[in-house]
Image (cartoon, one colour):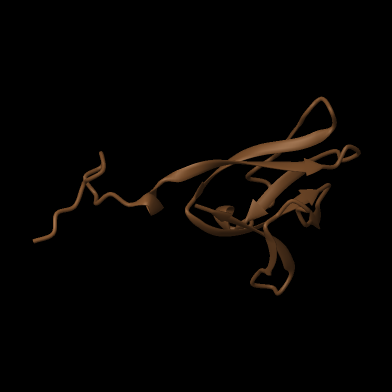
Length: 103
């Protein structure tokens, strides 16, 4: 008979149930506002605003579960790929988006 470790919530332990804090950086020193949108927030263009750092770069920390995540930056409303992304993929509209893997 198999035994399973239970997490604090009483459900079977799974590495997939944990979210990892992931830092995103966008170099856009002349931008007025920058957001990140992706499959993790249903491509909501305003739910994850990025904060400008003193050097003019933008940053945000997002909690992401294990797996692959598609996203892009919205720099003054314009979708922008992340040059530091682990890859490029396509969204449901066949647009090019950035790809990140979280393990």
